[in-house]
Structures are given as C-alpha cells and as structure tokens.
Length: 569
Image (tube, rainbow, N blue to C red; front, top):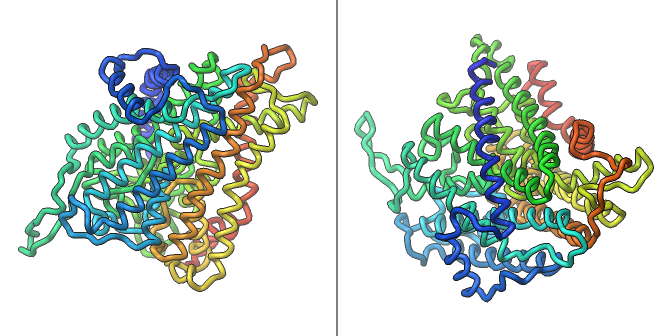
C-alpha cells in the first residue's frame, strides 16, 4: 500500500460526497413535485408522456397498487427484451449478422437486465447486435435503475407521511427518475467518456494492421452511451466481455475515476434526498456514516490483501513488493483495482476493472462479503437506500428489546408487522444463495462448469449465486455459466433477489404511511447519533456474516490457509 494510492481513494470519496449533496437536494425537489432548473425543458416532455400513457400524475397509489404497477411494468420490459434477443437476427443495426440467442440465454439476460443485475453469460462483442445493445439492454438499464429509485422514494414517503393511504404513483416516480436524473447525468458523462477515448459509433468493427503485418478485426460500437448508464444506474453489464478492464470501455486512469464516481454518486445522493424529504438531515448522515464506514473497511482490506502479494511470488523468485497484479490492469494498479472491487460490490453494480477470481483469497473474500451484507454500502440506486432502511428497522427493534419499549423510527412505531416483513426480506439472500449453491456443489452438470477445484471452486459457486440473488452481476471469471442449468437457476435467483425483497419492503411502506407520525419524547431512542450508527453496523455484520460464515470458512478462508501453507489446487 502506498500514500499515493490512499490519496487517490480519499480524493474520490471526497468528490463523491461534495457532488452528491447538491444532486440529492435536486432529487428531493424532483420527487416532491417542485419546480427545478430543468422543469422548463423537461416539464412539457413529462406531461406529454403522461398523456400518451394515460397516467394521471395526481392519482396516489396504495402500496398494493404501486407494487402491482411496478411488477406489470417490469414484466412488460422482460417480455420486450426477451423478444428482441430471440429475434436479433431479423432486426436492424446488426452489422456483424449475429443470430438470435438461445431461449435459456435470452431468459437469463432479460431477467438480468430487468432486475438491475446485468449478469452476462455471453461475450458481448460476439453475441449482441447494436440494436440489442441500444434498444434492449441500455433501455432496461435506465428502467431498472428508475424502478429502484421509485421504490426507495415510496418507502421514504412511508416514513414522511402521516395517516396516509398512498405512497405515491409508480409511473410518475419512474418517469421523473429517468427524465430529470438519469438522462441528464448520462448525457453529460457519456460526452466526457467519448472525450477520454471511448468509442461511440454504429459501426460493428474496424480493421487494423498489426506490427508484424497481420490483419486484425477490432470490435467497436455505441460503447460510451452504454457505459454511462451502466455505471450511473449501478447496472454493471459491459459492452465488452472484459467489462471495464477493456481499454475501449475504460481507456485511462481518469476515465476509471470518473466511472467509480458514476457508480457511487446517485446512490449517495439519494441518501441526502431522504434526509430532505423526511425533514431531518441528521438521519441521512447516520445512514450514510454506516454505509461509508463498512465500505471503507472493505476497500482497506482488499487493498492490503492485494498489496501483500502471495507466497507464490517468493517461490518463483520474484519480488513480492509489487503486490498481486494477476488479473489487474497496470494502468490502474492495486489501489484503483481494490477500490473498484469494493465499490462495485458494496453497490449492486457488478462492473469490474480487474478479475475478482484472480484476487488473493482474502482480497476475493471482500467483494463476496460486501454482496452478502446485502449490497447496501451504499447499494444500488434506490435499492441501497431501501435495503438500509429495512436494516434500520431491525436495528431499532433490537434497541427496543434492550430497553423494553416499543421501538420507533423516524416518528413511526415499529410493530410486529414491520419487523416480520423486514426479517422476511432479509431471508431472501441466504435462502437462494445457500440453497442453489448446495445443489450446484453436488450435481455433475453444474460442477462441470467450474474452472477450479477445492475451496476456490466452491467460492466460484457461492459468488455466482450471491451475485445473482444480490442483483450484482460480477463473477469469478473461470465459471462457464452459459448452460441451461446456470442460466435458469441464476435467472430464478435474480428474480427472487429483486422482487421477493421488494414486496415485503413495500408492505412496510404502506403500513408506515398509514400510521400517525409521533413527536420524539425523552424515552425515544435517538437514531441520528454514533450509538445508532454502531448498532446498525452491528446488525448488518451479524445478519450478513453469521448466516454465511460456514460457507466462507469452506471457501475463501480455507483457500487463504492453504495459500499460506504453500498448497494450491
């Protein structure tokens, strides 16, 4: 580890916080329906879309109607994307002449992009046409991110409103998320990425002559526009198979820093918007503090583990002071690779600029742990906030048990219904991760897709199902996942991780909105100070750590012990 590396990391986090504050204020105004600087330009477009779709923006929806609208909207998006992928060979903007993809891969990919996971069992530049990339995948990148933001705001309204029947209107929230937040930021950052050397063209490839005179065909396409929304929407799916390790998808160290900023900024800004909307910024600071403390710890552990190198370097007679550079880009180095790995998994992004499967066992454990903590550090756009608020409900319940009184959070009594729904939501991840992993670890078909044996092979399985259920999308690269088993089971895990979590969360939103908001009394447990932050961190670590510790012990921890003992598989 070097001071220069830490300076880069600290600078990036500082820029994220400083820019997220004004963006969060802007977001709060957007969701409150107030006039903003973009209203003169986008207001007529917004109203036109409502008229075209037959949406009444003044109609409030209860939590059931809001949830059903969201499910119908996402089901339509799935069917449309599935159809595009299956019929790709008949559709325009296909300069390479790619055929339609198989049914199981189309199912997996459509589910993946609709759920904001962007798990990719295919090689993007050798499978997807420009039409599929732009009209299929990029569109769902916008819509899945808008869905997450809308749901987070619905839960925030549950806390902010008093004695209300509704939590907002899904179509209005999703439209405003796309028009006022995602599109403007994507437009600006896509231009910046093009200026940094990222391709943006409808051509499928270019021919090049190598130094020895051979001819080489290099894939290109509308890369910058796809990268802008994949990062800002914490989607993560790459235009190229190597994702952000590809020089066309991440050409410079400056482009790398911009993309990390893109990943973080909206997820942090929505926390500040939460503080504005509930009228208590201190609550937002407490939530953000818990998020950032755990994320910085993850960055530090990953950086330390990769900088320490491996005994294999010494055995090969190499200088270990350069750290473990296997699977990493020299132009980014250890610091920016470790930072990216922690950020992309603390979020639900899944984009990678280094190969997680080539990290040291402890370095690879960090992204796996961050996914299994719920991807709420700070999590995907919207999903990180509502996941953190679910954890906060459990934390105040624990505090209530300790002091012997009914817990309260943000002026609302937290009763049996809210606690049951919160616990039900948190059970989704371990049920599907451990359930599918245990089956895949004993069946010959799934095991044939694993590139390594022993603890590392088990980690590949655990990581795949954690990434799918957690809607992350990154992977240990030696897993060959384009088979009917992996495509189908990962698709089911992605659906459960997204929607089986959302439904109980929305039930909480509806229940809270109907309750009368209470004034804090002397006996109310304060949820804006360091005591609550510590309790919240403890709840997150216990729920994420204890449920998965036996699996960690058999996978990456066992591999670390073997590495130190000089044994490999």
